[in-house]
Picture 1 (cartoon, rainbow, N blue to C red):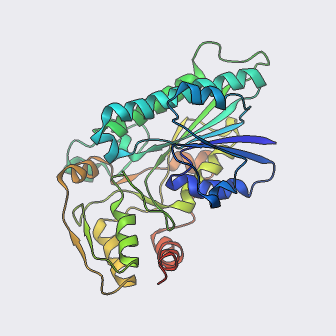
Picture 2: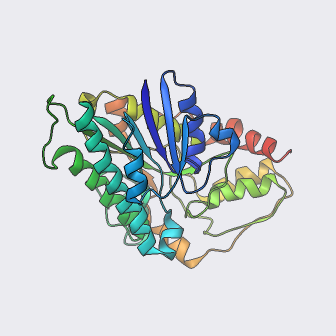
Length: 336
């Protein structure tokens, strides 16, 4: 029996991940979130805790379980972090450090490395100018790591923290000679879900646009038509987490991996949405701060390492994501 912890279970990724884990045999799932799980999600898990991941008392209670995998999804996202950087650091960094220490202690106690799955982000990249962004093209994991937002700074630090805690901290192995912690991170692009609407993220213009149009509402996009960053359909995001978790440790050559699916401009997304929901008006009203953040993120990423090491490949390109997943599912959600 595997015991799995999912923090931030009420979030976008959490909703989809819990459904995937519920289908796994021999999996006992415990969740943590600031808010109670809804009845539908609660039915999928063994135990749903309510609490703050950065609270040591909450972590101490969690540690009574011998977790085999931890999916640490809880975080303050990019726009929210810019509004309250002190809170962002406390949740995103201190919360992660507390869980890493907990995972390592469990690994030492059980004699089995605890897999720690960490969703990082393209916010770790920082482009000095729009021209630099356009010239950079698809960036690797090791270039342009000069984030300009608190969220990106928190995430790139936690990537390095997790790597250090796995490979270098103190006693590297337990008594059985096994590493106690196995940290694995994914650099997610903007994720688009057909069933949940995000809050607090800077890539939210894409899902907001689709969800608004499906309700027959006009939408004023907060970035320019030419704004471009990588995106991914939520099912592929969950698939990537589970595929990386399942990969044999000896196959992995690095702790942090880029993943990609498609990289459209805001105008290309708007064209597809307007065709699917005719009569809806999509205009542009760039927000200076959010636009500047988007301009600082890369236009695309190089995910060759993930493809080589653990066979990553997305199921959804842009056409399939919209035609088979996003548009029909979102239309059904709003009764259209």
